Figure 1 (cartoon, rainbow, N blue to C red):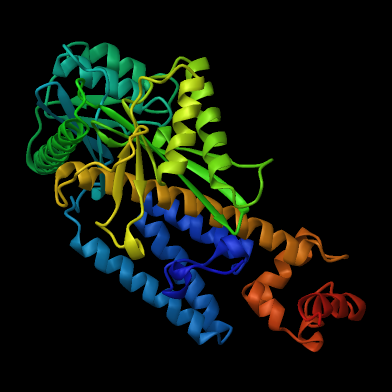
Figure 2: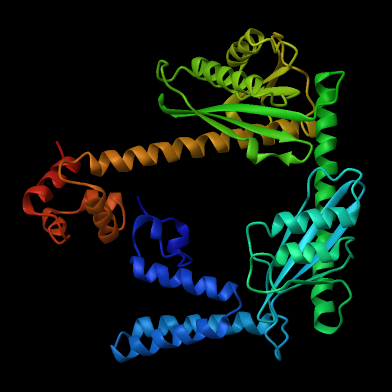
Length: 443
């Protein structure tokens, strides 16, 4: 309904709420695409045309905007390491390994300039060699994107010719893969190698911390088997309205956002958190059992003994009574660190060490579930509010709604608008303006 902070600090033109014309937004997108392709001169030429056009039409503020854009791009360009003599397009690919974990770093060079890099952690690489991992990565990575004419790597692969032919198939240029490079290419490759090494070190450090937390939680709960996967549930609503349940997943690799789930809760008494937890837990694990998915080693509920009991009953009904379930009851005045931890149906809370890795893990999992639930609830509420506040008014459709938001800058501004203000909008006649005004100013 209104632009976010990115628009306020002038980092976004707010297309999501219609504050930019489609033609202008399309121009911005095309310029970004050209820049990412390395066609810097084309971008400069287009901005120069726009600047000259604005200046000739005496739109000096707009001309100054394009001038500043050109200056900013030149500053960025000046800080990039580049081969100024030739327009080189290539990807520098480096791989590093520690135990059975591989990291592949890809450095993008377009027009002789570094545009950025990405790091990847290939899965299911146990017993695989570097060559096998690289070959598999290249084929998968370039499956949905055209490779550049040159790929340089820090390691050789066994089936070089076959991979080159496969990557060249169906595109307008031949792809060459090189392992022995010099000068500028060697420097780019060194950057990629450094990226891969540093990224893997960070990954291993995070994984070591995560495993320590899971071991600590296992000891805290006095379980025989080490916990490797935890799922946490939370409920979010506003006095029972727009109720959303959320489930987040934490494993040995940290939070697994691909497995996050939200549930629209319906058919319950508004504000009944017990019924909401029951519905979410039953739906989630019924589907998990049906689809044969890996079940968690422990379930966490953001709630006290009541919510814990309801969730435990749901698991028992599904034949999952062996999964330990943990309840995090809020402490006095909801202060962080004052929570009480309950396990299964035990009446007394567990004795806890305030700053132990186990407690930290439970807190961050609980906080992540709360974040995921509340963002889903707010999105649902915002969508309903936007529709009810405008489209429920007779005579207001998607086009008029878009025009109102674009002209006034948001729902709140429309609410404050006078009838005379509303009449300035295309398609709004006096009768419709009166209806809009009465809707927001009834009583």
